[in-house]
Image (cartoon, rainbow, N blue to C red):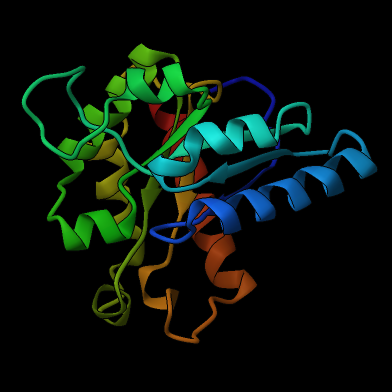
Length: 201
């Protein structure tokens, strides 16, 4: 992973946003971005799948990329309700989130499945955002670095580079709880992730 790392700001809309409100928000965001010129970081919006094409058109020329919130590990087939990485690419996506804590918890997704999704993203020419993070119980037991190390080892495909992969640390215990990780908490995890990536690649 020797490529220069550029900061990324990503907004995951989750299961929120109907067309009219979503387009209004997207146009406001695009207008603001155009007003301020090219940003010093990559900017990404990951709306629900129903809004991908409308937002792609609404934010054209604004330096804002669009991404999917998830993809299937297969290219196609009998997978009702799923979406493939190549479909996301065809819609204009540049990124896709895989392994989000809500997918891991709500849908029982394993790191092995996350790796398959990241591999599918790479094949389609998408940049995979692989999410890792510990629960409150794991943190309380002092297992943060162990859990994240295991998730990283099992979720990250061979051939991952800084060009095709982003690793996002997502402390599960802080989501929707009002709890905020300290700078020291985040720095410790980031240092561990970087160290593991350097050793592996």
